[in-house]
Amino acid sequence: MERRLDAYADFVTQARRFRNAIRPPYQPGSGPRLPVQEIDVLARAADAATSPVFLMSENPQTQAACGTVLRTLGRIEGVLHESGREPGGQPRDNLNEDVERDSRDPSRYHFRRMIINDWSTVGDERVAVVTGAGRGIGRQYALALAAADFAVAVADLNSEGAAETVALIEKDGGHAAPFTVDVSDPARVRALASEVRETFGTVHALVNNAALYHSIRLDSQMTVEMEYWRRMMAVNVESVLLCTQSFAPMMIEQGYGRIVNQASIGAYLGGGGAYAVSKVAVLGVTQGFARELGPHGITVNAIAPGLTFTEATLSTVSQAAQEAMVARAAIPIQGQPTDLTSALLFLVDEQSRWITGQTIIVDGGLATRL
Image (tube, rainbow, N blue to C red):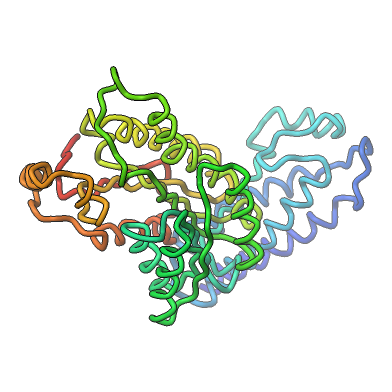
């Protein structure tokens, strides 16, 4: 252990030397000479510091040393950016000729962005935003996150429902605040992000749960009304895009974030009208954002619930259809909102740091597939 700690101390020392080797402040066109050997050392340090051997260690000294190295390397990355290099090793045109020539071998200049999947490095309190949290599954998600020590921004079109959810959280000693929002309105979503930042300071987890479900219609795609189709896509799909665009910048700033989108088993069963099609689209949006945001330490995943017995389900799905879907499942029971929270809590936790672009199906085995 002492040898490992000594190695970390060496990494920190060399990182500090590297930072001092770059002439501040950077002047465009001055072409600072970057020390190639020390960049190589930093690349190796980045690999070692993000090794599971250290990140998963329970030893306080190891964790402290690892955190020191990661924070130091993170500061170095900022210096790299300011002095003419983008993280990831692609040189800018205004670097000197020696750097440009050597950088043809990408391995010599690769400087990986630190993905520190430990929320304690970015704040004292985790903050989660849950849309559509005024009732049903969204409310249960908010309650579960609050019980897991998240401060929760409860967002819903129905202000009374949002206030009720906040009251339930506060009754159990949690921290939450209500926000009224139409998630299909770009201006209102941007305003929501500003309000949440003002209230909580930042966001660590975003749960895109809001959707049109109470008014679901299983219209044929041959006859569906375009107004209904567009409204379904606006609320169920575009809202995921808008909310992620608005909240992800906060996560990018801190190099950490968890985004969970609400899909549906309907995306896998076929049919289901505009609602099912919208949930197929959510899967695509999830995978797209996973690719874009992964380099910033942000994971993006989805949960696809089966038939979950909420007020909306009882008022929308016929009794006969409910019984038929329960009977088809490998576990033929009536799924409840609480059956979904374990998947959510896993996806917003550090344990899921290497899982992104995936969908967890929680449906009792209704849509078993390879």
